[in-house]
Length: 190
Image (cartoon, rainbow, N blue to C red; front, side, top):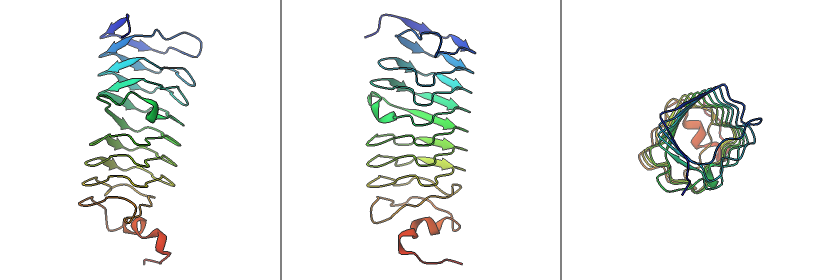
């Protein structure tokens, strides 16, 4: 357990590539316009925190706790969320760039992605049942052996999900997006 506790604090316009982030527990804290690019956030606990307009690209998340954390307008390129502490892992993403992010083997049931760019994100072996993908670009995102039961893809686009390799029972798709379920057959839908 970390010794330092930060509660109800706002951290604005801090470049953590130049200033050291204190290890500890951050509860109900806000991070606004902060730069965490390539910074180690390992072994830090974020509980009910909000990140707004932050750059966390390629940050290190080894054993990082993200418990009820919201990301809004954040750049999260290449983040390996699979390295996070899985206990009570929970987050939401709104208007974020998540290119090459990895959610490999994570149990993130009910996670909400809104207006996100998830280009080449990896959801292999993840549990995303009841998840919502609202107006998200899923170009080249990887879905393999992914649990997507009751997930909602109706407003998202550019996905390619093989129904034979994923569990999609009662998942929701739009008529326009149905081609993303048939890609492997190489058929043309008009």
